[in-house]
Length: 472
Image (cartoon, rainbow, N blue to C red; front, top):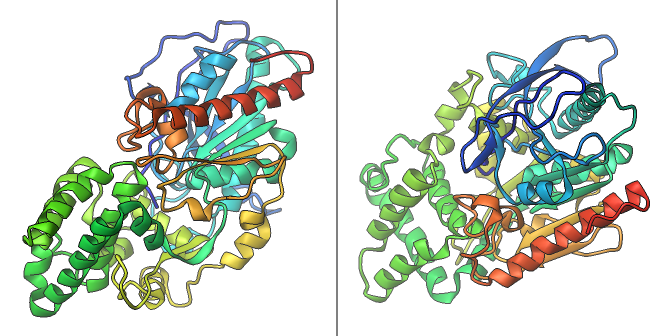
């Protein structure tokens, strides 16, 4: 699953004191000042009172106390180091909202255990995470009431993107009384056993770049047969003993360019080399090392089964193992390819994924995607006041809700570099643009129109919650 950042602020805990405190921030983050909440370990247990400390952030510079809305901005599957200064900050300023964000259990500094052995991961699930959010929401509402000497609930809007976007939709579905609306940006609500990511990648890449990527895959497979060590060394990936892990790295690196709005960084040099009949594998290796590793900050360890199996210490570097655990147990998202003519290597098949799950987490580990979709509805989710936003070039948009309805409107922002979370992150999506700036989108107006749609629905939800109060 993708790398993502989250972020937040320090405010006084004294009732009646102004919410507008001095912040520790950067341009990219609204705040990095962490707070801690005592969270229940197992929300389903009746005789287990164990707890753990969960990190959260708050930003209240724009908060119209005491009755303004609260944006519950869900942190994704990774360390949450603050509140990101994306388009949600623009919305918070417009609507006088506070922003709070809770780090996902187990990730970052919010783990119940010091060691992430498989037996200690049984409480890592979307279901437990949703109860975390609900319990925290109640705690923070009480905190607002204490600070402002109020007794009423503020209107809460839940916001998330990618997996956190799915959590946003599922939260509104499962706890409709705790939020007046949900924005699910690139929300992957459909758990899929074998997701066909390569199809959207090929469509987004276009014919020539797709042909070049297929050629890269063939050359890599041939190189592994002739001299596995030297082929992997070209990518500084000698540590990957399993050939499938290496080919997965190559496939993910290509997907990322389209997923996060940087197609030209990949396709321009690759197509040029393809047309000149140059060494495609060397050109692609340069892209992987310069962009995917150095700029995007991916890590070879992410694809190393030995690392995933043996790196058990909790902390900021445990996300790879945790993300795979969620995929191997409840979400799936096995990125497989057909046997022939695919951008992704055919060696990255179902067997590869199941072998990885068993090797890393123990025999019999299997993603119960049917149970997950039964619980939440998949892309047939039936909630109320849930807005789904997707980018046209995002390979993951087919795991989101595509069919619009009155209670669950769904929109696709169409432009060449409109990828994962474009409505919140702007263009390109990596690195995220300050305030969700859309000026670098291939079609800025299309992206801005998508952002206006979000503002319109939030305004409607708040008006419904507050009666005659107008927010437009």
